[in-house]
Image (tube, rainbow, N blue to C red; front, top):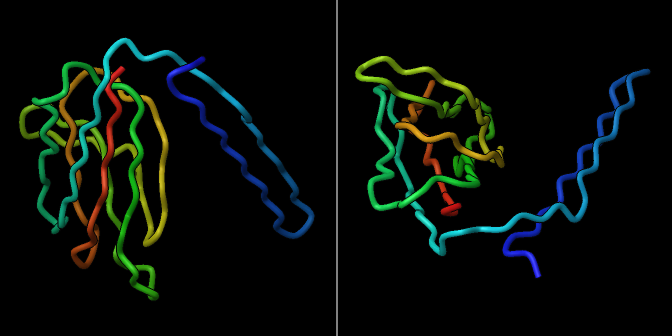
Length: 124
């Protein structure tokens, strides 16, 4: 039996544009057993996400926990090298992302407001 099974579904209907994407029952094996979970209150300054306690980076689930109905409490998430931050993921309030992380250092920051970001990383 596989260590991790996940399913991703997306359906888009906008005017005459219709698109569906389904990745059902995808599986993967994990060599390490562990999870790193952090919750960050993100201001507009870059905030490092410490992954020092993880032996290896695998799949990551990130979610903007802001309940801002105006949609302005956006948070970005990405790589950091020294003091240079490169955002790769942009999450509006309530948005979530699922991705496999490459080795390296990560950070997050809020675009406006001070949204809370939940990051859960499964060791690979």
